[in-house]
Amino acid sequence: MEEQTSTRTVIGSAPGKLNLVLRVGKPDNKGYHPLYSIFETVSLRETCVAVLRAFPEGGLDNFSAEIAFTPSGYPVRVRNKADLGEAEANRIAEAALADVEVATHLAFKAASLLVELAGERGCLPNGYYLDLTVIKRIPIAGGMAGGSADAAATLVAVNELLGLDLDSSALEVLGRRLGADVPACLTGGVSLGLGYGDHMTRLDKDISNELAGTRHWVMLMSATGLSTPAVFTAFDTSDRGRSEIPLPTQTHDILEADENLKTALGTAAEIAEILENDLQATAFTLRLDLAETYRAAKETDALNVVLSGSGPTIAMLAQTQAHATALAKKMQNHPNVVATLITSGPGLPAGVE
Ligand SMILES: C[C@@](CO)(OP(=O)(O)O)[C@H](O)COP(=O)(O)OP(=O)(O)OC[C@H]1O[C@@H](n2ccc(N)nc2=O)[C@H](O)[C@@H]1O
Ligand SMILES: Nc1ncnc2c1ncn2[C@@H]1O[C@H](COP(=O)(O)OP(=O)(O)O)[C@@H](O)[C@H]1O
Image (cartoon, rainbow, N blue to C red; front, side):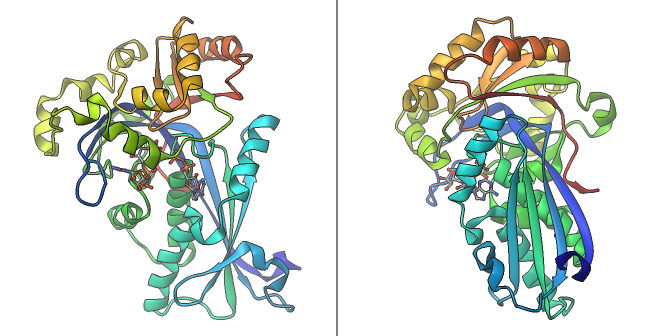
């Protein structure tokens, strides 16, 4: 019995995000874009249940399809459970997850970094494997950082499980190696991301308790995902991509002078005024259905509507939770909307339960 061989379980979770403001600069020689991003994390969270288990008697062959090995050969098992709240949304998520090989799964990659570190420190038990169950509540390839939230949830869970004692800035450094959105999922709240969007300044530190969960969003899920690199590449040849608007780079200069950063901590009506996404027009050229969905959402009484990151999920800002429920009802039968996910923000940082 698998459960009897388990030593210890640690459960980590991390929030998804949307971008209140996303400005994109010109790509560097690695093809990566400098960003100015004001992230709002949300209450939709990914969970990673991490367990160290002794090898079963028959070895790992029974579930070899769910296993990948770290560079030093330590086995990590990854299973996914889709829990998006609606049957059709779960079906779509499960189909997308079936295409994600264990070795490329962001939870595996995150665990692998920590397992290797534990190996170097001599604190990795032999005769065990790491068993991860990832509970997905965020649409796949949806522009809401679901994979990045898996990585963040896994980093905090495995850090604790293996007794590595890495602090939040060490986890942020590792997170950056896994993906540009991972530090935002680790940080939580409302944050400014500079560099590739992965150098974080938390903006709501002093008021996080009063602000948490006060913004209400309806996320319009699309039946098909959108590739982030494809959107960035198309952006580069767009008018906006070729324009010479410089992006600010120094955090302290920005914090002093930027009114948007103060407004980002304001009321829903105030943040409605600053929503902006440089990738939106490009995503709509690649996917005309999204432009239609956006137009329909704008015709409602939502405070404002914006594409989440590189899309395809579209975020509608509501005045209250009841307003969000009413907006979701208005959009749920739109032919391009596969599910309406109601969420609130800002969300809590990644952490263990
Ligand atoms: C656009 C944003 C905005 O928050 O979010 P999503 O819409 O994907 O959620 C992020 O920058 C995405 O972050 P993430 O999805 O973690 O990106 P990564 O895995 O690091 O990179 C995926 C690909 O996106 C492009 N990329 C990403 C970040 C960046 N600053 N410049 C880029 O050009 C690169 O083509 C890269 O190969
Ligand atoms: N744990 C994961 N969850 C989702 N996608 C993952 C994961 N690991 C790797 N991927 C790959 O990353 C791509 C983007 O994932 P995701 O984070 O869901 O979207 P986005 O970057 O748009 O926020 C997916 O298409 C998938 O191929």
